[in-house]
Image 1 (cartoon, rainbow, N blue to C red):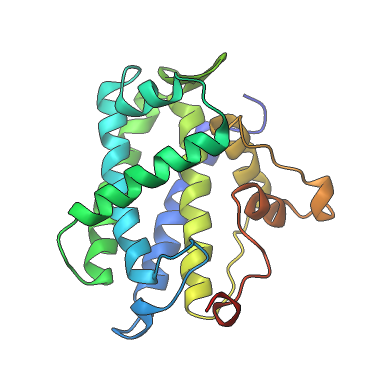
Image 2: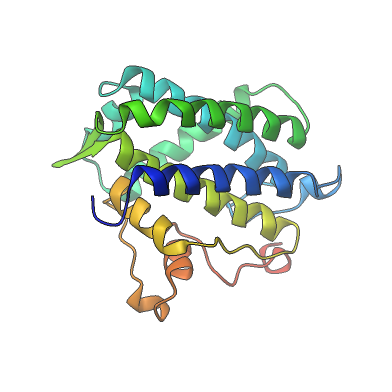
Length: 214
């Protein structure tokens, strides 16, 4: 897998979790209600999503390569349709989540995410799921997860009126390409800026602001 290795994965993974935790402590009760680049989600909703998805990744890994995610991906649906299905799943999980402060959700997320990281190295080359004709290994899926943590760190930073840029965006792009082959990253279209290209590939606008979102 060119440009994506276990050592890079673990470093990027833990960096993403750490940044999310560092941003979370900067929120107040009021700012947890701030809008984020994630559609209608407020910062507290995003915290809940992170908690849910970290637990989901354990479930997917437990049942790989025949997990709930694998069954969904195996349908070979268009990426837009897949995105809508995943959004409905996210909404259902958030609705079922116990009411708790955003900080509590982030603490639970970090605990779950770090436990997941302990499982990855021994399973790196095993199959995780298949999308159409592409086999995605546990290591490749880790690339998608690493990118997700850093993208959500950017979302939380935006909610605070700050900016966030990871130290090694090229590594995250390599991980994204390994784990999310159906969503292409066009670095040339972002003037060679790997981070902006990844934001765009994930459906985000690098110019997003909380004022413009209201």
